[in-house]
Amino acid sequence: MNEPYFSDSQWESWADDLAENNYVILNDFLNKNLLAKLHAFLKTKLEEEEFRKAGIGSMADFTVDRAIRGDWIYWLDKIRDQEISEFYLLIDELTAQMNRLCYLGALDCEFHLAHYPKGTFYKRHLDQFKIRSNRILSVIFYVNTEWITANAGQLRVYAPNEAFVDIDPLPGRMVLLRSDIVEHEVLKTEASRYSVTGWLTKHPIGVGYLG
Image 1 (tube, helix red, strand yellow):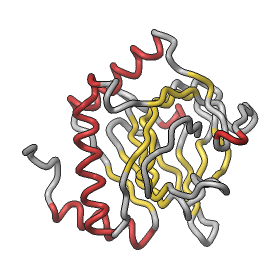
Image 2 (cartoon, one colour; image 1 turned 90 degrees about the vertical axis):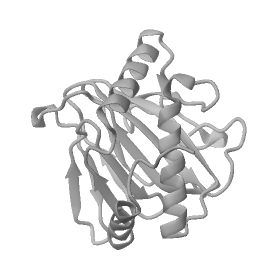
Image 3 (cartoon, helix red, strand yellow; image 1 turned 90 degrees about the horizontal axis):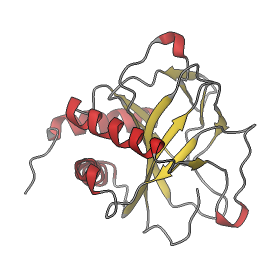
Image 4 (tube, helix red, strand yellow; image 1 turned 135 degrees about the horizontal axis):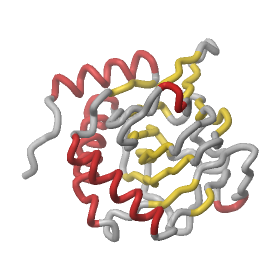
């Protein structure tokens, strides 16, 4: 059995913050080795031209609109992408703890690598679809190896009272958001911006889904 990455008390504290604010920011969540591994994997997939333009909507109404979002993505597969198997062990722990503490009932997950080239953004949105509402928790890992304020590209998270907080995509940082409640956007970035983004979901992901 694998040793847990974090103690129960740490998870309990993070779950309390998530319950209170509907989002939580966890600094240095990725250890240096896993951060380096994810960054290298992402750069390799970029060099191999495996990324595709990201779109909006489900498979039935999927469109690419660069006026709304400008990122490029690579969908991960737990079986195919064995180079980052450690990442999925961490996701297993995250899912188990959030189910235990927040009663999520998450049964599956979906993740992709995301690259925002300089000058791109993603306008304000909610991580939920009208025809499919199985996303429970949005999960974002930042895998930039360094980041400075001048690079911009913050994640802007909106609270229910329309206040907002801007979150820098710092190396190793993770952000959790309630998918059905918290609207957010990615502000225009002035440098290449890298992340692993995904969702814990209520039921297994269907074949042929585009998100």
